[in-house]
Length: 109
Length: 122
Image 1: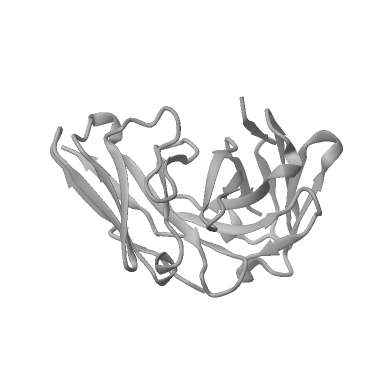
Image 2 (image 1 turned 120 degrees about the vertical axis):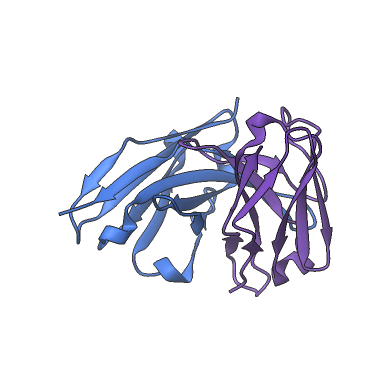
């Protein structure tokens, strides 16, 4: 089965731009979706498809993809963006399965 | 609004089984796959499997094959996940999530249930 690899931790100064990346073979076939999770809460979808935001997600969140790498960019990070972020995609190996990245802990300084 | 409400926390002994429910509202239950994801304490998200609420067809992650059973009751718009032969490392929060697919095969999990903590301890 496929794997998705994320950096365990990333930090950003308040108001600056940060990119969180996700690598995996399945991303050559499928766009990643991205989830924000704050302590004690369920994950929340922030980006899906080529670069789509669900209703209620601020436009400072955006997504992109190139080759086997998907990226989540936060332009002008806010204190409330401090959270864990997970990427996800369908497994491209032919099995009906899905895979999550290991997660990235974002710290806003 | 679209909402998934899960059953309450469970404490089980090793070797026992647990059945978690996920009640859907605000949309046509049979129109979307329901997936199950778990998260061990301090760890990341782990995909367990999915059920087609229309047909009842399932796909499970290889890791859980033989131990997990996903079912549904369309009359009450509820999906179930049963995990058997529980071990201490099955202690986790279990989430259900509705998955939407587009015409090019992309998928996204939204919304998620609030999570159900299952604790396995002797």
